[in-house]
Length: 134
Image (cartoon, rainbow, N blue to C red):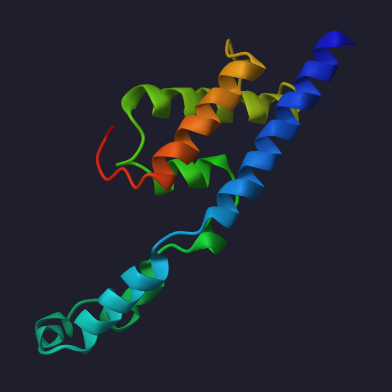
């Protein structure tokens, strides 16, 4: 019973992180404008022969592209340190293990406080605009 309650709390924590992260927003509007401007510029002439050159802005990720932890991890390859990336991968595997009744993923050695700290560090790095592997 105690472990079931802990597992439920971990799933709730992860679900809340997904929601919070999706609401953080990102610089996608500004990046999309830069890409669109580049495509409209004279420089675009050299790109016309390339596939998707007119749709370059569509490749910029927005908050709508962040639906789960794996999306968060994929979105932040230059923000997460190697250790933080490993912790997030472990949390993702653990979440999958819990959500799919042990058929997918694997249990984690991280406790709920460590999971919370990992999420807090990710949000701190996003908020502080860390633009390198910190």
